[in-house]
Image (cartoon, rainbow, N blue to C red; front, side, top):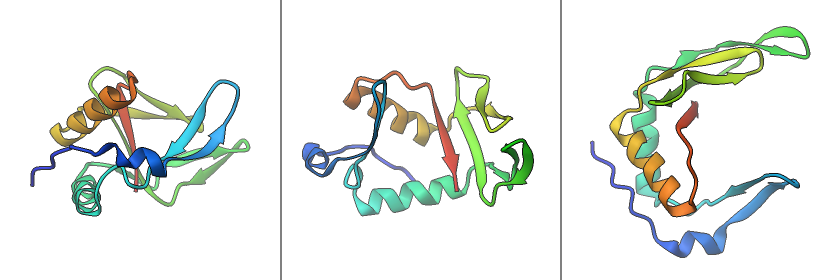
Length: 117
């Protein structure tokens, strides 16, 4: 299944700021990909090799995450969170294309993608 990441600039009009601080912000763009492309991307993510129910530290105690997690990067050794290290796995082609598209459109230099399902 091939996924082409072409987008229309119309998603900008629906962009919502979720969090804004002095040094960063989190924005949501619900229309960045069409519904069909989102569904295909989600199906491809379901095929990824993810760690199921990883252990994390929460307020100094061990807890189990009730989801599957994977970090994908060709440059980073991993992603640290909650006392854990999600070791990097090579970026599959479809995530490489998505990462390149996001970096190109938003002038960013992200080097990995964290997947949580």
